[in-house]
Length: 106
Image (cartoon, rainbow, N blue to C red):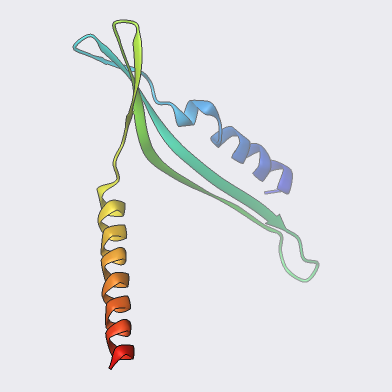
């Protein structure tokens, strides 16, 4: 696969139609789900080795637009795993800081 083919394939994947899913209607509310998409690709050529190329994609839901009665509202998706992990890291840092402070004051 050439660098040109990798870039073409990557640009096909990273388009707005990948970010917004098909709208869904429930109980008079139209929902348009949205996702964060990141990606990258590359290609290499070495005269002693074979050519190589690759690409990677990362996607996660970030929320949805809710349309009801002519009004649009953004409804964010909450990643509870991330919230819990960050809270644990903050608590751990606070415990470590308190322990270090207590140790220094002795």
